[in-house]
Length: 513
Image 1 (cartoon, rainbow, N blue to C red):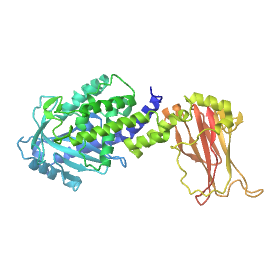
Image 2: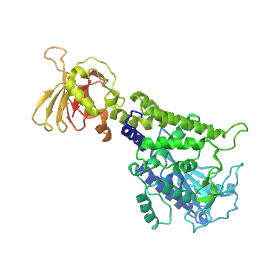
Image 3: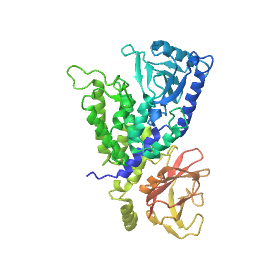
């Protein structure tokens, strides 16, 4: 049995998932943009206006698994179906060229690019891929369609049912109450528009798939696209087949889903069909042909090795030090995207990193051992913000603290570094200096005192209150409220009139219980 804090791992993974989500604001913006594209295609100047163009979402945007495709900035790919009343035997190049001309004018001039199966409309923060299609049967909820493919080595005309797949995926993944709400909403609309779900409303299975997609994209980026990555719809189908048994731990679901995919990728995939519409083959483009002497196609072999590495990283995470945990998270999900998640894990696990089973055990030992025991701890965290000023030490500063029943209330007592504070009490920290000459000022004229406040422990992590940043309040005193069990600290920084940090106190710790 591994000795690790699953709650802390779950919190860290959810924080990372939150960073790669399509936010509610971006979702509304994407919806507004594809509705505007629909209006644009219906204008008289459009080549396709006479074909009654109609747009609706498909793919990751439709099934709520869209993620940012870059760790450096938040960029999203939004997949759309463009239904038109045209003949199914049209030449794919003629169809795509016509859509391209219809879009590449006015507000979209210079933002349009023709692809193999779609026309891409490019924004600075997202790409909208518009795939022309012909609806084959309007009476089926799956909306089977024919799409057009310009790839010289593939069929010109392909049948697909992205909405049918989305309905199947929803049934496999979403909780029953969400499905029922969606069915009621569908009765009032002719379009399959997804209802945007916040992260805390998504089941762990859905979030785990998003994290696996991020890992896939990180590996693809490292290889610079030299190996064709598994398509999202195929990955979604295989992941949805995993039965989570009602498991609510994201770490556990992610680990088991990875094992499930390893088992599938270790053997010949064969032909995988869209469960809602069998003419729609999900393996028509991936993994490709295998070499004569190879057990698996090259694309599949690479993805299998990626999944094995992901499994190894997840297992190592369970018992990793804070530093190693940061390295693993950054490798798996990107440094920028994982920063706040690793902070949550580190802050939540602070007591364990010091060799204690819980925050309570660390607090009790600190209360008993006082200042002498405090010096044996490894203080400092990776989520503490570094000072932004040039460091030119020339000034002494130390911190003292007094306890009060309320802010600016009567002083109850003074505490030393490492002293105990009850939850609900207020602390007034003060920065004391030392005059350079007798009778002189404690700090140089024109200098300012800045305060850095850092919390640790499970409760602070759960409340997203680990902080580690510099307070907006400046001056020789700082008021704080003891709200979370654990060990927390402040530091005072003296910044002179030229913007140099000329003094820095040691960490003044309080023990809240």
